[in-house]
Amino acid sequence: MATARSLRRLIGTLADPSPRLPASPAQWRRRQDHRFLHHSSSSRASPSGRHAAPPPPPGGAPRAPSRTYISDMRKSAFEGNILRLLRNEIQHELERAPPAKPVDRFGPFTVDDRPGEQWIRLKRKFGENEDIKIEATMFDGSIPASKTAGSLGEDVELHISFIVNITKDKGSNVLEIMCSAWPDSIEISKLVVHGCQRMPSGLYTGPGFKELDDELQDALYDFLEERGVDEELAVFLHQYMANKDKTEFIRWMDTVKHFVEKKTT
Image 1 (tube, rainbow, N blue to C red):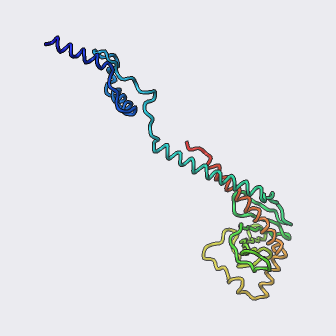
Image 2: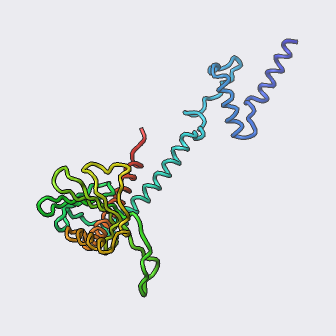
Image 3: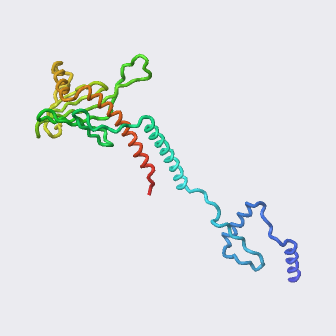
């Protein structure tokens, strides 16, 4: 009986000498991976003479991208788009109307412009003992301008705030005059006298300028005009600030661009 069973096994082996393949290559690859994972310790030939499944290709099966990788790719795309837009805008501003080199004097005034700040400072001496200091902002407001014949769109008049500080002798009180600069005129809004230090809180600052007598208002305008605070200064401030506005805008875009370009460590 044992001889008969051995003979039948031998006949079956000769009739089907090769292992039966799965239905498809994909099933075959999955089965080979399964055999490798579960029978890697049996890499040598089996007692029956059959060989173990071949190892998978180097590196194993391809892995799906991780969430971190996808997030980094999206971030890189967003940053690339920001950089492209910034570079285009900087190039457009420089080619269309590049800013001029700022001047450091206007008449008797010296001009102190600090890059990145919204203020400029003008200084001069007047007479024997007066020191005059003007601090002017960049454009900080606008009003609709009267339309002229043939004008298109909505025109506006830009506004600049500035403060005139006048001192007489060292340690004296300060006459502080708050003003507005329109494109071709100046306007006084208030004036106050206080100590040489900052204006204390709660100080009585007097009435609004337009509440004063008309002749007194005219006299104060003459007082400022004599010291160079006049329509010509208003024109200068608007021209200067238009140039500074462009310069600061380009500087701001360049600062943002360098920040985005900097790699995260």
